[in-house]
Image (tube, rainbow, N blue to C red; front, side):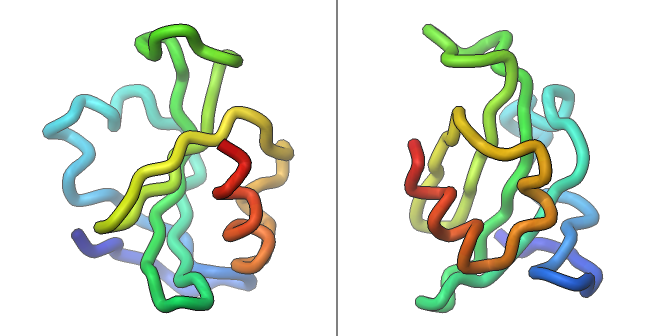
Length: 96
């Protein structure tokens, strides 16, 4: 899965996610959506979703970190998550 993007100050901002519609996730997404490459070269897509359809949610929204190898759901994250550096996003992705 590739992530179309435009460059911006920290990381890359996604213009869309290629497989989002098949899972019905796109309708739950909020903006912004980000892409970044971690220190190991993994391309991550990040987006915030409403947790209405998540069993036993820990909040009203969560961040999804998605790569070709893994998906991580993060419940506790700062409001300015889309302004974090690649290193900060990598650390945040482990706060599942």
